[in-house]
Image 1: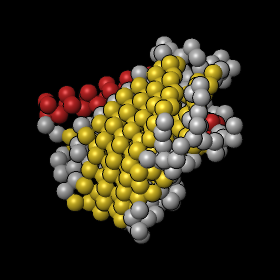
Image 2: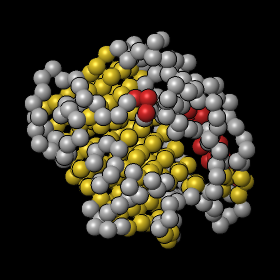
Image 3: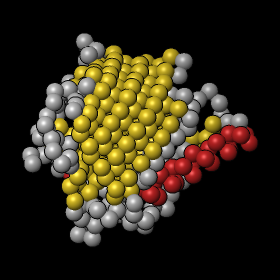
Amino acid sequence: MDKEGTYSDSIVSITLSENTKLLKERLGSILSFRKKSKIIIFISILLSSMFLSGAAFTGAYTAGTIEKSDNNALVDVNEKLNYKPWKLDDKAYPRDKTAKTDSFTFVDSPNVDITIDNNAAVDLITTSDKEITIDYNNTLYKVSVENESKNWKVHISYLGKESVYSSAIMYVPNVIYGDINLKVKTATVNYNSVFQNVGNINADMYDSSIFYTIPDQFTGVLNAIVSSSYLELESNDEYKNCKVTIKRGEWLIEDFPDGFTKRNGTFTYANGTQVGNIKFNLEDEGYAVIKGQ
């Protein structure tokens, strides 16, 4: 199998179960604080997009420039959560199984349904193959891959204990797609420049850590609803030929790339032909970092 990119260059190095649990607790604390004081609390969340290169996760994510509200706010940028240094141990928890369909015939413009849940950590990277496959640890994950006609169905769930950390790698063919449905609940997902040419991507992501990199020359519509989560959004080519709309809601935002404008809580950006239409609706409470290249 010819796989473009390697796991060590792409997957985020973070604690899976503790990450989502602490995120949920922190967001819950915000809601409780707002009910009592009726002001917005600005927080710092210990999350990292460090990619594995043999180094353990040892640092803390601390808020930088934060989009401020019109209300007085309690800025808590120095508090650090107690994460233990961690790195994936391929020897102790090897990805010892590959999920694929029993039989496969490629059809142009396939549709894909992807569900990731239950504290799973998944890294999506491109492959020059035409078939979706997933490498994972068989004792820690439950994975299914189905293909009927032009429709793919993928489901990835984490089964391990909270003290055990591992991840799955999903290889995404670099082809033209029809419609893609993404459902993520209580998980950590790195969309590493996948789905370059699509019809529509409909994403519903809740209580999760999402690292989404828009690929070069993105064509199609990405419509994402993200709630009660942490989000890092960036583009390999600074959103070239794209229209970007981000509705903030009650989220805390750390800065924006140059060129974005804000009006009534909505951030927009437009460039070139706008063949890529990127829309993020941020609901409930959350924390986001929006990057350019």
